[in-house]
Amino acid sequence: MEKNNISENKMGTMPVVPLIFNMSLPIMFGMLVMALYNIVDSIFVAKLSEQALTAVSLAFPVQNLMISFGIGTAIGINAILSFALGQKNQEDVDKCAMNGIFLVFCNFLLFLILGLTCVKPYLRSQTSDASIYTYGVEYLMIVTCGSFFLFAEVTMERLLQATGRTVLSMVSQCVGAAVNLIFDPLLIFGLGPFPALGIQGAAIATVFGQICAMILSFVLNVTKNHEIHFKLKNLRPDSLIIGRIYKIAVPSIAMNSITSVIAYFVNLILGHFTMTAVAVYGVFIKMNSFIFMPVFGLNSGIVPIIAYNYGAQKHKRLTNTIRASIACSFLIMFTGFLIFEIFPAQLFRLFSASDEMLSIGIPAFRRIAPSFLGAAFAITLSSVFQAFGNAVYSMIVSFSRQLVVFLPAAYLLSLTGNVNNVWWCFIIAEFMSVGMSLFFMRRVYVQKIKPLPVE
Image (cartoon, rainbow, N blue to C red; front, side, top):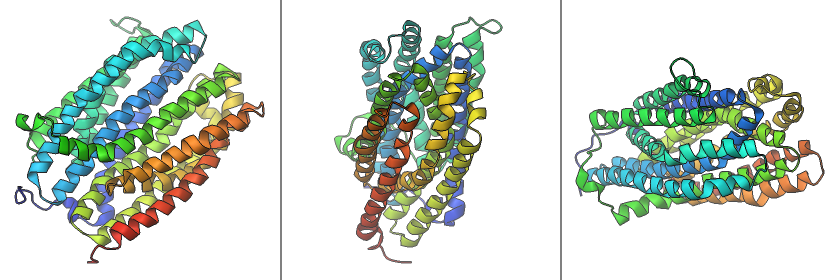
């Protein structure tokens, strides 16, 4: 085992608060840009029609499922690779990176098959509107068959993040977002020499942005990421490495995939009132991501910090990192709470909202917004669990929140016959999520943090 080829990384030496910002700000900025271009994507699509916007909302669970597999696998790669860096184990670092690339192909094959066989029955189960169905098929067939570039982009960017090169990861994300933003209006509306492809243009622009980001992040890894040696011999599947990756990744994938399942059933519940309510839920998801993505970016930055310092047995740096990240997450979520409470009408008008959409959407945003405050704690602690290799705790909290509380609450509240009552399920579910997260955090502290030597 090689243990002498890796010098001390900044994750073990830089002061904690500056380190968190150094690691997280580029990721936060990159994810904020990604959230922004998702919002702009929907703004352009909404100009086609409300049916097109609704189709994109129905497509969300499938897109989120792809993202869940990509990011979940990458989180496992990130945590194992960062732990190996902390131990100065070059062999495991290299094997983890190359096996992660192998898993890109596996994920793509899975979603290529699903895209070709399941898209049409999936959409038929949610709507009888022919225009919404047609829009949805056109959009989803392109993004699922082009999913290789999404998985490759996410993995390459996470390899940069795992070794502390978050600025380079941010550059890659921003390039992909910029390409998408530029080509969205060109391909949707047929500006200049480009054909007017409608909703297909939105999907093609998304995939093209992912291709550009993937190419750039691959080049940056090969030329700048010297702590990883990209050797073809390590591309051969290693069952031990893959098993360690998925010990962390599977709970994360399951935890995030359940969001797709919940979104599917929420769409069904809301569709019984009106398809406009489904469009409102789609707008909420887009705008919600603008607040949540920076928090996810922040917590993506702390995962390698915690994993590295746990491997290096540094007690004080672990606890300081957790405290500081919770404080930062709460500040971001409080800002989002104020925006959703004060400016809901202005947010909906960005999507060419009809009077019916405004009448449903404004009270929805104001009822949901307080749940953001609890989410700040739950999201941060979920990342802490993943960094310590206890991602199963995150999975238990997420499953309990969404399957045991959120979905049943949404259904029961829908029985009142008032769509506005459905939105209270967010606050009910978040209250439970915070309580369970604190319970598991105490266990992690007692079992893993407290026994470490105090510097």
